[in-house]
Image (cartoon, rainbow, N blue to C red; front, side, top):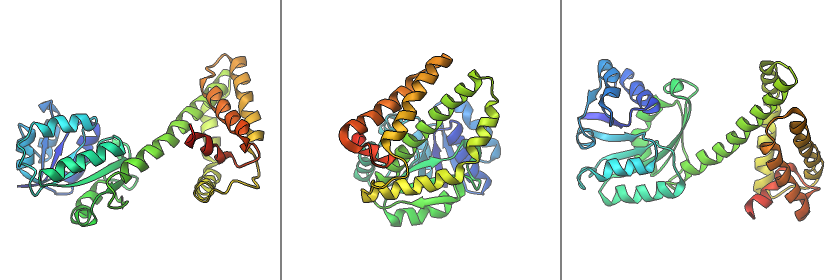
Length: 288
C-alpha cells in the first residue's frame, strides 16, 4: 500500500502530491483527467485508474477537488466498505455545515475524518510560507501530523469540532475580500489621477505593522464587546467613506465598493453606534 492517495490534481492538488513525493512519501494519485497525473508519475507517484483503486491502495486519502459536491460524487461511487479503517483529509473549500455532513458520512462507513483549510498559493506548498488549519479528533490529527506538516510547516490543529477549520477559512476570506477590493479601488483612484500604482502598493505595505496592531485590537474589542472611548468613531470615518463615493464619481470609476461601505457605516450610525469604535459595525452585521 502507498502511504497517501491524493484525489484531485488541479494546481493545488498537484502541489500537495508533489510535496509528499519529493519528501519520499509513497503516493497514489487520481484525477478525472488522467493526463494531469503524468508529471507526478515521472516524480514517482503511482497513478490509479479509479478513485476506488486509489483508496484501496492507500491508508490515507487527501481530497482536493473543486468543492464538497465533487467530493461526494467521487466517494459515493466507491464501495461502501472501502473507507473502513482509512482516514479522509478534506482540503477542499466549503462550508462548516458541509464539513459536519462529510464527517458523519465518513464515520458511517468506518473511516476517520479530518477537515482542513489551506492558506497558501500552490507554489508555496511545502515551503515556509504555507499554512494549513486542521479540525478533527486530536488522535487522528496526531497520527498524520508529520505527513501534513510536509505540506505546510505552519500546521495548526484547531480542535475536535470538525467545522472550525472552515469557519476560520471563510472568516479570513471575508477579510481578504475587503482587502482585495479595497486595494483595487484605491489603485483605480491612483491610476485615474496618473499616479504610480506600484508606489501605492509600497505605501500600503509600509503600514503593515499598524494594520497588525489594529487587527489584534479589533479582535479583543469585539470579543469583549468593548467599543467605547475610541480614537476615531464610526460617525467620523463614515463621513470620510461617504466622500469616497463622490471621488469615484469625479474620477469616473465604479462606486459599488465605497457605496456599500458608506451604507454600512451609515446604518451603524443610525442604529446609535456612531460614537463607538469602527469595528462596532459588527453589531449591524450580526443583526442583518
